[in-house]
Structures are given as C-alpha cells and as structure tokens.
Length: 245
Image (tube, rainbow, N blue to C red):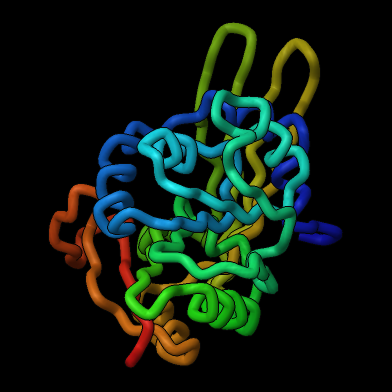
C-alpha cells in the first residue's frame, strides 16, 4: 500500500472507536493473563485503549504499556483507571522501559503490525531482555490459513449494512511476502471514511523459530483464552513463551 505508515491505522478517529470496541473474550483473556502473570508486574505491547490492561490493573496488578499512537494513549488515559498505568510512547521494535516483567503480552494480531521479519525478531529480543528469569511472553494472533482460501488472494466483504451506512472490508493478500493490505471502508451521510491496515503475518511455527532466535522457547500453545487444545482447525492461537535457560 503506497505511502502507508502503521501509525495511519491508529489516528484520532480510530482511537475514539476503540474505547467502545470489545471482542467478547475479555473475561477469559484477563483470567488467563492474570494466572500467567502470577501477581505481575505486567507489560502490554500495543496497549491501545486498555481493553485488557484496565481490567488487569483493576485487580491490583502493576500494568505498564507500550504504544506508538499518541491518540490511542490519550484515549486510554481518558478512561477510569487509565492514568494509573505507566504508558510509554514507543515502537514495539525498539521499546525500553527500564524494568523487567513477570508477563509481557501482545494481543489481537498486533504483533503482525510489525512489517518485516527482521523487526519482528528485534521485538522478540526486546521482550526477552525485559522478562524476569521466570517471566512469560504471550502472543495472541490469527492462523493465516484462512487467507489461502480466498479466490485470487483478495476479497470484498460487507461488515455491516444499515439503512444509512455501509461498512466494507477490502483485502488483498500477497503470499510471497506474507503481507495483507486491508482497508475498512465506511460509506454514510458524512461521506467515505477509510481505515487502512497492513500486516506482515507469521505462522505459529515461524513465531516459534523467531522466539528461539531471541532466546525464548514455547511453553504452551492453546486454541483460545480458555486453553482449548490447538489443532489444525484452530482459527487463532494463544502462545506462551519462557526465557531459555
């Protein structure tokens, strides 16, 4: 996508929407993360509007966050409890907080917002440096197999159809570079609004190998936050890594 920057996906308009965006898995995700954190402290990469960080903090855990979007950070800080979190306006690839954590996590495919394999490895190396000796790192992401079932590596789907508004999802997939170029298009009385997204996805096995390069090793992989077994039919995964001895 010519001229695209990852920051373009998370401006003020999008940040305002994230305040009210829930996936329905928040209770299960918070329970799983809290049990893995063993009391914390915790660091969330791409913390966004605090969908999971705020409930974790409400449990009394120390929660820090990384995000490169000033608009998302402002949205987080405007919410109850948001100013109690220590937020760093940094890129995941080169973050540094000066602390170590019992749990670091990145969810909702945000790891794929890093657009090259080299930079994904650099991020994982930073993670390893910021983990305690017994700390864990958790990645939640989709399994890319669904992209290979799309005809001609592209599609247009209706996300929402209302009397005064239509939302479309327009996507193109490049399997050679493991890249998706996507735009969420809203057409309504106020005009046409675009929310572009570019991601460089990785298969679970590739994430495992990048983690090994960074000094991490896979401890668990589940098919979701309630820890069902991961298998060939799982549409996404929750993978947990520990520092290699």
